[in-house]
Image 1 (cartoon, helix red, strand yellow):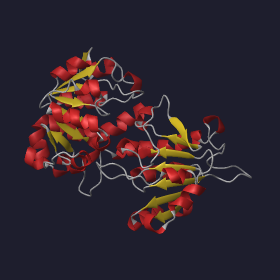
Image 2 (cartoon, rainbow, N blue to C red):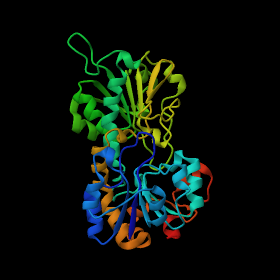
Image 3 (cartoon, rainbow, N blue to C red):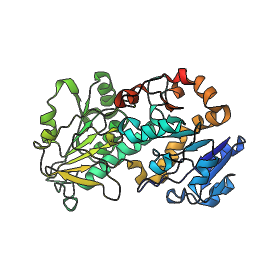
Image 4 (tube, rainbow, N blue to C red):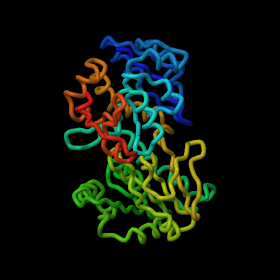
Length: 370
């Protein structure tokens, strides 16, 4: 099968869909891989590395979209990419459609086969293709938040871990999933005071087993979130409803209770954000201020560490891509219900219920479409 690897064009997005080693595995399986010129350069992969792996370097993205049967990306297609997607072409990437009405409409119109990394499941209901980037984003969230707390970044002017004679910062992590756990890894490592809020008592017990008394577990239905937000120096938003828009846990009114110069890092921004005042930002201009609270809402946080991110993502996605290329999408998806859960749009039909419900499309089950 012919697999296309276009260069990412989202602002400051430096990841690429496949490493040279992944390309080598695909070409060894008899597939042809087309890589856009210098597509992996910012992640540290030269054209020569891809050529040595058996790929063909292509000058223009248009030629890749025109020739390839499978398009492999990292981020959702932007509008000029959507125009190039062909009927029956397979698009395998992060989509986050519940927060993207125009993109959803464009993919429906294209009649392509769109498989979203973030809704592929495993036998335990986890999200194995979202997890590696959630881990990176969770770790980066505290790193970014600590930087934003510095005075020259308009923050409170405090060090996350404190110092002799100075108290550590209060970090409030919303959501105890992959993002939350990884945020806690860095925040506790930096000696901050860490509260983790989650609705699951069982999950909080797991986190206590991992972190011991380095965290303060908070069950969401037994807390005063207003009070916790008012005491926080840094809030990390890591809540997730798979494939659906994130719930707004921090309201505009709650911002008025927060300290001047406190920081919110909304990792859930890809799914619309879990803070009412959140709006997507970029690595080039990552923050803005509402009611004296610094908001960091970069929608592609792992793009800031593209080499680490590309390796981590490929480790998870490559086995699925090999199945897709070896067997075609109908066989690959019909034989694996967890992979089938990744199908969001197929030949003009919306096949992921949360997306259909968000935008008022008729929902058609994925198994019915294939």
